[in-house]
Length: 561
Image 1 (tube, one colour):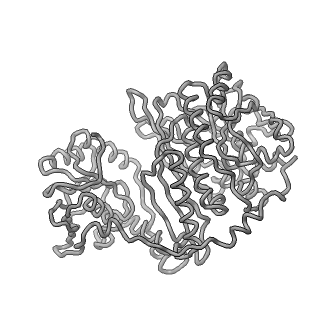
Image 2 (spheres, rainbow, N blue to C red):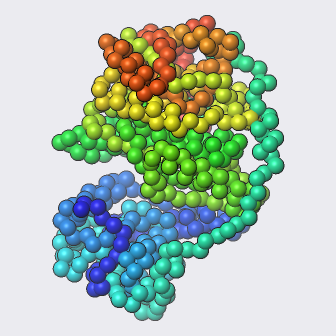
Image 3 (spheres, rainbow, N blue to C red):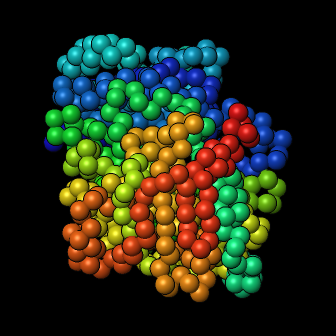
């Protein structure tokens, strides 16, 4: 009963736009970035204003305002303003309810009075919502908005006409059946599997020099690469602690928010994408991105429940790009069906290319999970000495598309790691159950850089909400590789086999945790223990935490700071 839908109803009801004023930022953000390539005069001119300007504080006020509006029972329907802004919100609300809508564009609050009707309609300014309320509830609606300092304006009415009619300066500028814009056309574009796929598959990393005694240098190189380095320079640009409900954040595996102070109920969110895997195989690569986000949420102690996505590709007018896109969507649909997680929303960005050179296909997949008690969330950092370290999952020498191959050898080829979504489900069930039963002190998924990079991140990341501050070295570990790694230990530590995680077990919980893993059919291999001032991979490398931290933390500040 608390669920609010984007389905307009009730002729005579009022359409209210509330939140930030409409500005020139983000105009055509979705339409331009989905309809023109980079590198052309027209494309460059159009793209310059297409980045929205965010206001996290207003966003928080808007969220709290919406929650109070729901509690007051004054919302008939509601829609966020995202891609295509007012144009999209009005058409989708009216089409979903099979009603008409009359909107006066002159009533819309503007930050730039020079905006034209198309710019007003297509602006993607952030922190805006559109709602439908009854005339009787309008006064309460506006008072609640005022209490939260959220500007609110009546911009129109629901009608029986079945048409979306918009006026500007007294003249009609839009008069259409809303479903014609909301549903859109269905394209059947030609697609073709690129010839290079066979060449890429044949050019695997099997002939690359194995790390051997170069594990130390290779790991430091991975930690210092843009993909492997600490992302704090980016993630700390915004204050993620507003209102004090953030209980886990980057660099941990998922962001975790407390949403109920009485029960400590929380949600976890992670996003992942890997353009290298998707270039080698867009179907499997998309499923690997889905699996990684799913695994990250579970590694934080949550149960994955839902999926969103941001699908980034080149021009769909290129049959080879269209093939990548179709395979990616097919992989996501099949993967979500097997994992039992629905796609709740998402977006597509096409034409990401300069001339004929497209980006690597890069679907970014987000997974949302729920924690019954956020006090039992799992950090990814070791945090304390004396904890047994266990590797979960099965490792094979899977280096195709790996970060090691790219950074150390400039190589991209072969096939990506095998996808095993049933194994991902079993691993997620173990991690969530272990968190609920408080068997683990830390958990971290294995993905880019494999076991070696994951262990380095565990050492350098604190056991609380954030990484240790600059100058604090973290917690080291001593690792003995299992017997099955002896033949090719370098490949073992840099392999990016999926459905794996490394965990630190609480003292005294080893036997119970081993039974839990066996019950779910998840391989569990003892690796060593936490402690000391270095990452020690016995027989391969010993790197002091200060040296690890320097390599890990200096890359992005040096590039952007």
